[in-house]
Length: 402
Ligand SMILES: Cc1cc2nc3c(=O)[nH]c(=O)nc-3n(C[C@H](O)[C@H](O)[C@H](O)COP(=O)(O)OP(=O)(O)OC[C@H]3O[C@@H](n4cnc5c(N)ncnc54)[C@H](O)[C@@H]3O)c2cc1C
Ligand code: SF4
Ligand code: SF4
Ligand code: SF4
Image 1 (cartoon, rainbow, N blue to C red):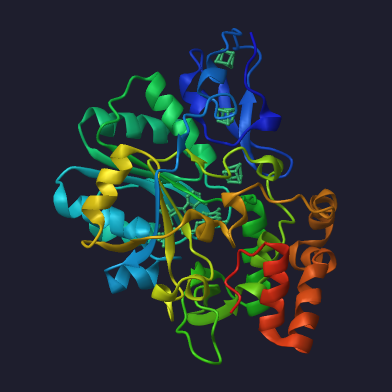
Image 2 (tube, rainbow, N blue to C red; image 1 turned 120 degrees about the vertical axis):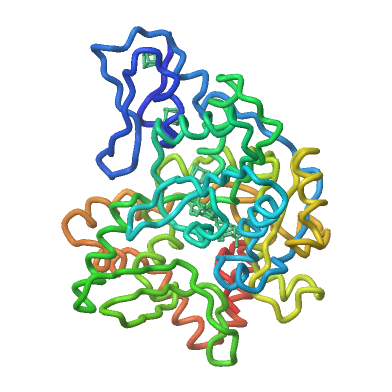
């Protein structure tokens, strides 16, 4: 019987739950991505693992309606990466139900894991994007299935590949999904947690102390001198706050240059407008340029509604915890590569892990990321407007560059 293979694995752990003889474990591969390992001595070749694998089965929905907007709660908006959709959806559920479980990802000092939030007061630990592969295992699924059978209202959020594995598993287990809201992220790709850990170690050496807190996409006020909105990184070292622009941060440089993504991300089958979730959320990049109603705003989310259940939920949240307006999907796609196609694999990807294993992260990215220096030269000669024009011509931008 055909069965799952480690080289195509997204690390969703769905098959580890479904395998009848417990033959599948989650391990790290040579590049330190979480993938499956099959114990040959246990495997009975039943093929059940393939029945839940996102590689084989995707229950996708076509986008029905598209919106852009932001949270009505200033505190959620400030703490989130984008327009605070995740926090606002969760807030709505916690306000209107007693038994709520939110399945999302937190960053526990470099350990990026799928976890469960049962109390609104703990929700802020889950805010913000973490730009690496998040870990989940069999225990996560067991808790999710138990929550559903205890009739909890569940909000489940993740990258589309992992969400697909979660959905397949729940369907295979015949779980009642009427009280589950699935939210997938527009997703550019993931790097391994090992690269993130190396980065934190290098920061420790550079700044002379352990990083005790790190936020990707920390938001700074928009001023003339500091116009980049949410693309900052905040580090806490020796009780001191260090803020780095994403463009000058070695980890984020590697991420945005697509130098070290998991191989499956370069041929991702979850891009475009066929979506896994009831709702899809992402960044409406350059909203302030593309839509006059968002003039002056930098943290605007895009929201795609993909099912009738998703539409009912958005209608309930709108003008309550979120403020959304219909926006043509073509505008939302304009500066957002993964809403049309997978990212391109740069030629340097083949060299990345070889260099990284001997040189570490900062030296490797300094050697391989020639586009960073090219950008600096363009900005020095023609300013950011020229850079924006070139990016628009190439039709590719993820970073809000104005
Ligand atoms: C790896 C990754 C790549 C992304 N790429 C794009 C992109 O190319 N274009 C785009 O428009 N948007 C992208 N996003 C989504 C974007 O960064 C914001 O997360 C999204 O707009 C939601 O913002 P928010 O303010 O509503 O929520 P936030 O408060 O920022 O919450 C984000 C939610 O995402 C979950 N999450 C965070 N990190 C991970 C992770 N590593 N794996 C799974 N779930 C996670 C958290 O549980 C949290 O619930 C990406 C997100 C991630 C995690
Ligand atoms: S083929 Fe069956 S026994 Fe073997 S790993 Fe897959 S699910 Fe487990
Ligand atoms: S089901 Fe998930 S963990 Fe198992 S092989 Fe497929 S992607 Fe990997
Ligand atoms: S780019 Fe695709 S394969 Fe990679 S993490 Fe995102 S959804 Fe999964």
